[in-house]
Image 1 (cartoon, rainbow, N blue to C red):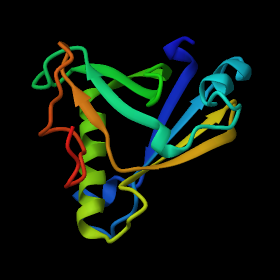
Image 2 (cartoon, helix red, strand yellow):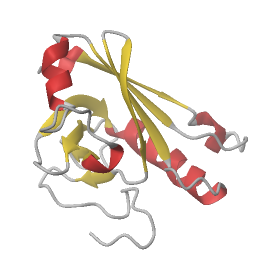
Image 3 (spheres, rainbow, N blue to C red):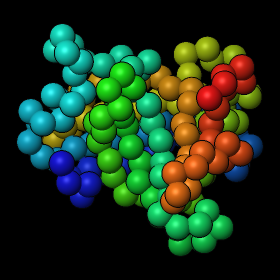
Image 4 (tube, helix red, strand yellow):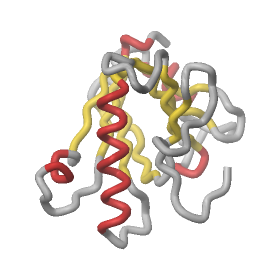
Amino acid sequence: MRRDYFTLEVENINWVEANGTPRKPTVLIDFEGPSSTLRERLSGPDGDLLDADETDVTFRLQASIDDPDATGVVSVTNRTTGDFILELNQEAADVLRFIKAARAYGTETDDTEGRYHVDIAINGDHVVSYEKATFLIYNSEGNLLRQHSLIPSGVEL
């Protein structure tokens, strides 16, 4: 699947900078391509859609994190197989802003279901939603950037 088949929008992140009421940050990913391909990747061996705990969300930088124009690749992967479910290009500053909001949401609320929400659609039709607490950031060499990642306390990687 081509990365340009995906669009990514975020919601509920501006409250952090405005000192507003905490709202769970949300990532909306829409795939505009052949639905069977993505549905197959979103499904486990039994044909059922993967649950949130069967997926991981990561961001792999393509340049230094200090570069104001840095971009990278947002990925959702199958935790069991390690296979990519989807990948799309995104600006690093936007991803880091989202993680800041998710971190603040987790700090300022007692929401135990997750720090952010992922909604995946195919051609505008909702397919699956995930409540997530972890979002890992890697540099261009593949090393985990713990200080920039969203890692819940008590989780050891």
